[in-house]
Image (cartoon, rainbow, N blue to C red; front, side, top):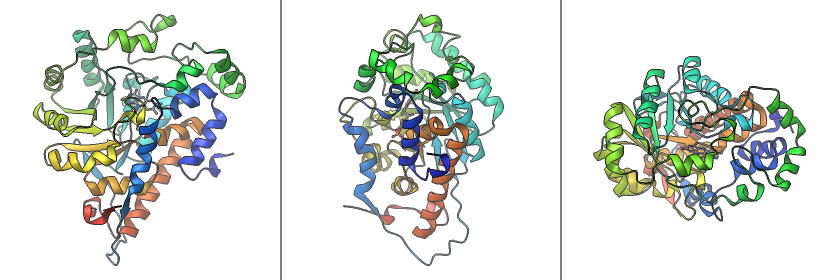
Length: 381
Ligand SMILES: Cc1cc2nc3c(=O)[nH]c(=O)nc-3n(C[C@H](O)[C@H](O)[C@H](O)COP(=O)(O)O)c2cc1C
C-alpha cells in the first residue's frame, strides 16, 4: 500500500496499521472502556443530513474562518496530541509543517516530542499550547511564561483528563512510556523491524515541554506517574480563573461538555471552548461533541468561540458542525494515521483531501463563504 492509494481516513488508517507496531497503533486507535463514545463520535454525524441550496453562484469559495483571534485559511486545525515522534520520526515537525502549508493552526501537547520553541521558530501559522494543571502552581506559572516567551498564540487547558481513561488495549499490550511491554507486545515490535530501524536511527525520544521541569529522563518518571503524581485533581474554576487572568490573551478550555461549564468558561474570561470527549479516550459513555454542539452554541455562542472535535473523518462532517454554529473543528486521528503512514507528505495529503472535500461540499451546498452555512442547511433524522 502506498500513499497514492490513500484517499480517505480509512485508507490512511489501514496504511498506518501496516507500518506501526501493534501496541503503538492501538495507542492511537484505541479509546476508553468499551470504546462506545469513540464509535459514536463519528456516527453522530450520520444522524444529521445536509440540505443543499442550488444556483447560488459558487465560482469562488472562501473557507477561511477567524477563531480566537486567529485567521485560518480553512476551518479545521490539528488538535494537540501526545508522543508524535513514536508514530513517525518526523513527529510534530511534520504536522506543524503540513498545517503551515495549509494556513491553519496546530496544537503542541505538553506530552509533545518537539519543543514548542522550535516549532514556533520554524512556522508562523497560529500555534496552540496544550497544557495540564499541575499541583505545583509555580510550575504552572513557569510553563505559561515559557509559552509566552516562545510566542504561542493560544493557551489550551485540557480539563477532561483529571484522571487517566481506562484504555484496555494499552493494558493488554503493556504500552506505556517508558516502554514496559508484555511479551505479546514485544513480539508485535519484532514484527515491524522497519519501524524499529527508523525509530532507532533518528533523534532520541524526548518530551521537551516537560523535561526542563520534570525528571522524565532515564525512566525516572513514567507518563502514568506524571498524571497521578504531578497533576492536580483538585483543580477548580478559581484556579483556572487565575491562570486566564495571568495569561491575559487567547485562552480556551478543551473538554467542556455541559452548558453550565460553558457559561462558567465565559464568566472567567476564556475566549474559546473546545467541546470534546478526548476522542473517546477518557469518559466512555459521554456524549459526542457534535450531539452536544447546538445546546452549547445556543447558550454561549454569542459570547465565546465554540469549537468541537471528535470523530471527524470527512469534509461534510466539518460542514455539519459549522452549520450548527462551531467556529472551527479539531482533527485528531484524522492526521495521526497519515503521520504514521508517511510522515509530512502523509499529513499534507490528508489535509489537502479534507480541504478539497470542504470546498467541494460548500459548492454543492450553494455556499461561497462559511457564514452562509446555517441550521437551515441541516435536518436531524
Ligand atoms: C494518540 C492520541 C493522543 C492524544 N494526546 C492528547 C494530548 O496530549 N492532549 C490533549 O489535550 N488531547 C490529546 N488527544 C485528544 C485530541 O486532541 C482530540 O481531542 C481527539 O483526538 C479528537 O478525536 P478524533 O481523534 O476522533 O479526531 C489525543 C488523541 C489521540 C488519538
